[in-house]
Length: 102
Image (cartoon, rainbow, N blue to C red; front, top):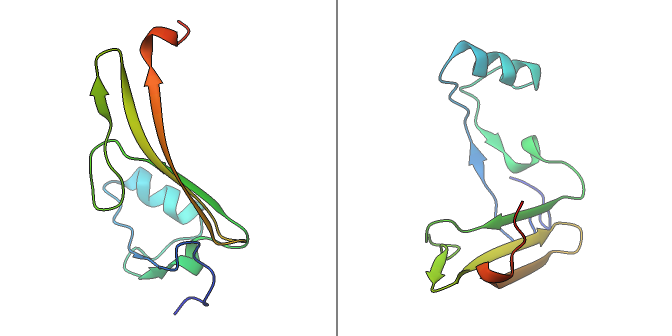
């Protein structure tokens, strides 16, 4: 079990990698993950002080997806820092008429 205090949100995760082709299998081996059947814990995959950020594209259990309105959109994001266990939730309003063109 991962040490308490590692996750900024107080949770954990487990993962198995399932490469879909030889190229993906080689990338896993190059990263030191040679056994795809092994169950990895969060401490196997991430070490030290970590920041994580995500923005919802479609609505799920943790974040709302992008919601469009006339002339813009609203997004929901989360930013987590493991060192201080800070979790920030951000709701942003994007006005398309004020965005620069690239």
